[in-house]
Amino acid sequence: MSQTRLLPADATGIAEAARLLREGELVGFGTETVFGLGADATHDRAVAGIFAAKGRPHFNPLICHYPTADAVFAHVEADDRARALADAFWPGPLTLVLPRRVTCPVALLAGAGLETLAVRVPAHDQALALLRATGRPVAAPSANRSGQVSPTTASHVMEGLGGRIAAVLDGAACPVGVESSVLDLTGRGAVLLRPGGLPRAAIEAVIGRVGTGITPAQAEAARGLRSPGLLVSHYAPGLPVRLDATHVGPDEALLAFGPPLPGAATTFQLSETSDLTEAAARLFAGLRELDARGQGLRAIAVMPIPAEGLGEAINDRLQRAAAPRP
Ligand code: TXA
Ligand code: MG
Image (cartoon, rainbow, N blue to C red; front, side, top):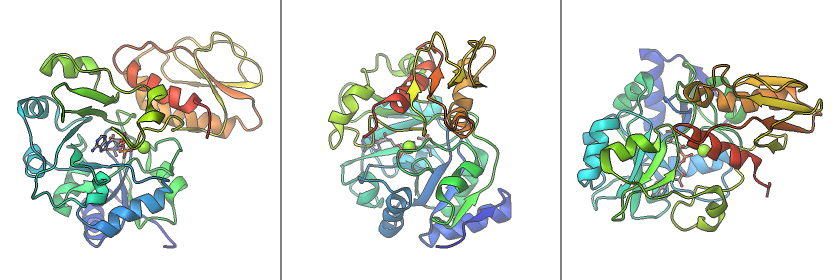
């Protein structure tokens, strides 16, 4: 593959992107959370192409995207909890892990050979139009090279994957900005495997108490077990990341939340007003921006971010960005 086409996110571009997907090509597209790297989930070679393009060291299970809950439940088995959550939050940033139906046509590689499948309906007009036009489930991890910061704009995708995939559907930046919450419903108790764009409290309001998910420290041990996609060092920018900074040096870049600490070499403001939703939407762009501005600096210092609401997902991503590198 030599050139990656940037397709307009209008009817023509969406039709062309759908045609490419049906032919087994890879297409980057926007969702409300982050940009996904899509492939026809029923096409083995296309799904394998995702791992090749991302340079993923392992076959982690991928999320399959559908245009409606009915389309989802034709491929996986839903219990009452799954239906209630789908009613409440789809389309939206919630991924459910459910048992595959025997008739499920999704390539085994998309689920990394597991008997379960991660599924969601994205809340994003262009993504939904693309899914309807494709007429197949679309497997899509975040559209970045393995281990790098997730993309929230089409140009982020081009920077990381240009020349390695057929096309990127151009479009507005992702409003949520962190990946979907991943909820495992295959056991008796629901378990939040990955905190994300839908806060835990919203899920608990519908199905009651949700088990404690996996923490970054537990994640490495879980590789090959419950949620093989969760590596400790992930979302890693080039500069080291220092969390919970209460002061900042002149040789550091500052990721600020609320009134910024004085003295940094350069500062990126996540949210002047300490708004967690705004901060989530700007998180990955901020890490990229400071990485680019901060060449030669010692580290990115990150101001403390409260753990409530979307703060759980933001802190999870930041802990991964700060984790020791392999
Ligand atoms: O917001 C999102 O979810 C984005 C957009 C593109 O939709 N997608 C995304 O996909 O973040 P990915 O592949 O980067 O993350 C998939 C997550 C991983 O943590 C993986 O381990 C988990 O879902 N997962 C997928 N299938 C699973 C399964 N069968 N059992 C347990 N965990 C699973
Ligand atoms: Mg990812």
